[in-house]
Length: 364
Image 1 (cartoon, rainbow, N blue to C red):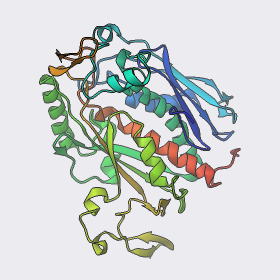
Image 2: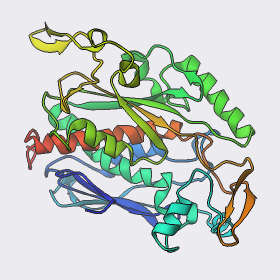
Image 3: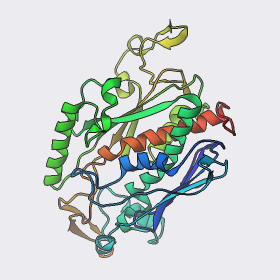
Image 4: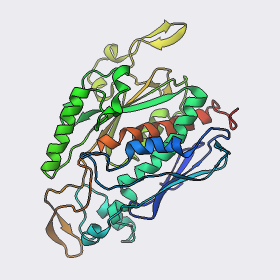
C-alpha cells in the first residue's frame, strides 16, 4: 500500500501538490445514505484555509471544495467520494531560485535524493502543509458520519504556542476556541500567543506549539491489538500532518514521572455506567477505547520557512550559502491546525467503528 493511502475500511487516498493544479482526496468505504453536501466540507476547510489573519500565510486561496463523485441527491451513494480544491494563488518563482538550495528544516534534500531530482519542489510539493486540506476534506465526511451514527464528537484547540500556555480548559470555553485567531479557549492566553507570533514574525522567525484534541462518545473496545491498536493508528495518522513531531495520550510524558498508584485510573459506577475517576489513560487501555473521552496532545515544530538568514548548502556547487526563505509562509502553523487534527482523529475513529461493525454499509 502506498504512502498516500490510509485506513482499512474507511480509506482515504490523497493526491496533489502545493503548486500543482489542485489538491484532493478520494474516500472509499463511506456507507451509503449519509446526508452530505459541499457545505459540510466547506465549513471545516474555511477554518483551515490560509490568509485569514496577520499571523498566517498571506497566500490567498479560496479553498472551495468540489465533490466530483460518490454523492447523489445530497446523500452518499456508497461509491468512492472524490473531492478536490483548485490551487489558484500559488507563486512558484521563488522556488525556482532556490531549487538546489535545501531549506533548513524542510524535506527538500531527502525528497531530492529519494525521487532522483524529479520531485515537485514548488512550495514543498507533496510535503507541503497545503496537503492538510485533503485531510480536512476526508475528515469532514468522517466527522459527520460519526456524529450521525454514534454521536461521537471531536474537538481540538491550541494549548501552547512557544512558551505561552493556556490556563484551565473547560467545555464552556472550548466552545469559544474559534473566536480568536490562535484557536485557544483561554482568551487571555490567546492574546499573549498572538503577540508572541507577531514578535517572531517581526524577527523573521517562527514558533511551534501544542494542540489538544478530545473525542467524546466513543464506545468501549475500538481498536485492534497489536499493530492496529487505536493509539497506533491515531499516532500514524497524526504524524502524517506536516510539522508534527510528538504525540501523547492522556497523562503522556507527565505520567512517566509518576508512580502507578498516582497514574492508574480507578473504576467506578456513575449513572449505571462503568467509568474511571480520572482519565490519565486518555481513553485508551491496551490499544482499546475504554469508554472515557479520548484525549490527545500533538506537538508542532516551529514553521521551517523563515525570513531570518540561515546557513545551508547549495548542492549544485557544494558550497555553503546564506538563505532567507522567500515566499509567503505561516510564522506559526498551529493556529490553522486544530481543524486538521479534529479531522484526522475522526478519520481513524470512523475506520475503527466500521471495522467493529458499529456502522452499517447503508444508513437508514
